[in-house]
Image (cartoon, rainbow, N blue to C red):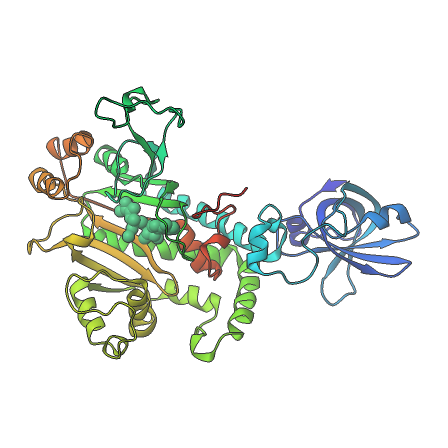
Length: 480
Ligand code: 4AD
Ligand code: MG
């Protein structure tokens, strides 16, 4: 007798054979003589129907089959007469692996709000929506590694504990083993980090980029895929305090090649899901349509979820400079009618998500790559342009998400980099190793960072980033 996943059983049904499956009860209905039990084992969004007749399954067992219970079922696989499924198992033996109290189990077979399910994050894997999202999260992880492997990139593990602050933003979580109730102080009353675990002050990384650059300057093409941590207090639907980032870094690549790579990479990952996650995407497509039907007409998207994914894969991204974007925004209707919260007056303004969304959703109606931002609003390591005002930065903006990728061509000229670090007060002693790569065999190079959860949001149509990572960390929230 074979023990199979429900996915395998549906893919390759061995009708009239005895099989064994495990799964959690989603629903049970029926009469005195026969119960219909819907079970799911997580391998697919599809449930398997179990037919349990009272002549073969004892009443004592049937009584314990509540929603949420975990079962092993042995029985004969049959074609089903029911309209909702094509297969069913006629049960010969059912073992209750884990009971679930009917009154206490929180996920009764009815619609729960996403907010409620966030509080039940330990159980939400057992819902259609979240199991679909997390299967797609897996598929995207695989697609990322597949893409880079096929392109000749090497995966590189960069440190999670770091002494360097890559973005210079000062929003880092500190890592220490000091006794917080008795912190060692120096004569000037500053904390004496020489007594700390690493003999210096350390943090959780905000990005693996600086170390990835070191790898690229020897391995040629590398990418990281790891957790990053930001202690910013942004409590929005697009920010996490702990999120996963993919950061490729390429020697001998300028910004054009970086943009081409970013565009090809995103399309490849999305296409992988279109080809390999059909059932989950179909489910999420219907789910999103139902959600959007509740909105006002002007707030609904013109395209369904799958159409949106296909559209991104098939069309070129729009590319324009920051200066061009500012001109479009300054003359836009919402700016003139003072509808933007932050009005655009001219060069220098930082783009807020309302501006990004205007460009992507209203003006171009497709993904947009903006390049050459003012140096003041970007990090010290971005390559200075001839105009000395802008740097070779690029942001990729997606519909309903806003910024999904941030990247740049890096400043490879020792003197220019050193000057920028001085200007921005970046600690050159701390980053001596970063500067040295510009001293020994420097070359042009570029890279970017993709916010993994933002990509999952786009592919699944989930509107809150807390719903695409199993256990979200946000300000005031580190449950589970
Ligand atoms: O634009 P960011 O800050 O760029 C970097 O960290 C560079 N070191 C990347 C590089 O060039 N190697 O972050 C990159 C992306 C953003 O575009 C966004 O998608 C995502 O990371 N991101 C976040 N995602 C979730 N929660 C947050 N708090 C995020 N902050 C950035
Ligand atoms: Mg950014």
